[in-house]
Length: 123
Image (cartoon, rainbow, N blue to C red; front, side, top):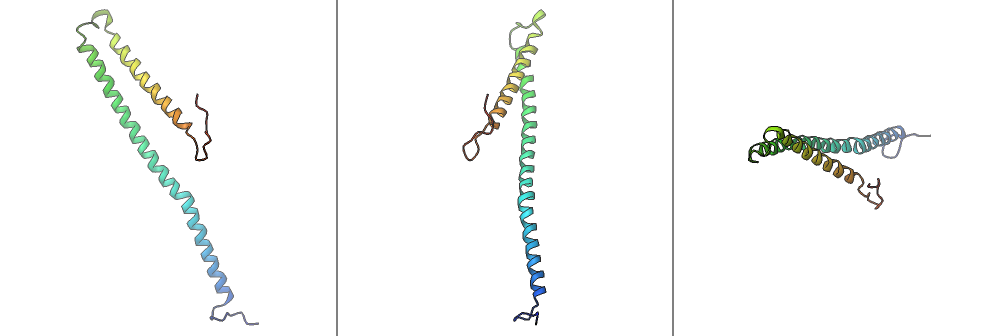
């Protein structure tokens, strides 16, 4: 029995070629399903961290601005025994902004999926 095909290549060469094609297909599929989503996730995390740092710096600058406003532009209301009040007011404002951010994050985690089912119940 002759093992060569009509085009001159043997069955072993053809099987080897098909195996190489299958290996390349599996490798491409693995890259598509693992590396591409990880690259997208890396960009998402990088922009999230950069945004968080920018918001944190902005909040600190705004809090110092509100503190200086309360200390300098209130006409002496916070002089003497009330000199601690602007610090407390700024601390309350910063905590309120942080609470709003946490609430927004929790609200975002309860977003509906593509099929319309919520992944987590909102409080």
